Amino acid sequence: MLLAIDAGNTNVVFALYEGERLLHSWRCQTNAGRTADEYASWLYQLFEQAGLKFSAVKDAVIGSVVPDANFNLSKLCRDSFGCEPLMATADNIGIKVNLPRPEEAGADRLLNAAAAIRDYGAPVIVIDFGTATTFDVVNGRGEYCGGAIAPGPNLSAEALYQAAAQLPRIAIKKPPTVLGNSTVTAMQSGIYWGYVGLIEKILWKTIEETGEKPRIVATGGLASLFAADIPAIEKVDSDLTLRGLLYVSQSQSRPKKAA
Image 1 (cartoon, rainbow, N blue to C red):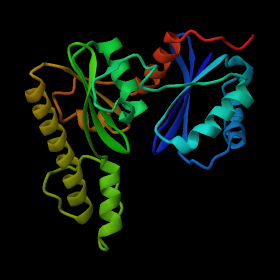
Image 2: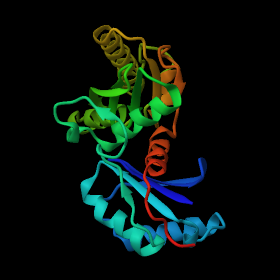
Image 3: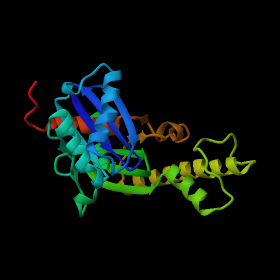
Image 4: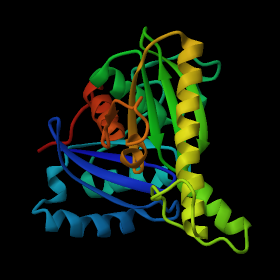
């Protein structure tokens, strides 16, 4: 089995693949100070609940945008699973990065782009509803061309709560009407419909600039919520980043742990 680890700014996702089949996935809050032993203790219980043992894992791959977490995630793979993890980078993800400084592109964005090319073809735009809302553009030649980064809906809602004394912390949801009849519904309307407008405008300007007709794929925790009111989004794919990690692992010829 392959252990794929997606370390994002908000959550770390651990996924088990058998071949190309996703068997299990678990997530915990990102904490750069969490030790390899703490990860192992938490995962051991989850493996037991699933009827699995650590020895079933033969290989591991990590995609991370949290550099301070990398040491302990790598140590977890070595100490608990007996394998040296592959770190996904711009050099091995397998997509041409058409940027002046390719190393600036986050691993998660390149993994999304590479997986989208393989599964949906090019040109394609991936919208990832994470801590940030990112737009990643792949042209018709399969080259990663950059995109746009905006604060995510949850981050924007939290900023309102932190900066305005009389505004509460809210959940992101579609309000019943655009005109909010309470502080909460007014905030929900501003966040929800504001982001619908933001997404549609960025998509429209991107397509205008590139002159191509890309497929639009959405991923991330809030993708399904917003896709309902954005007709341009053709597909919601919650496992896109994890499959990007799977494909990177498959593309690398490396010695596997002994059975």
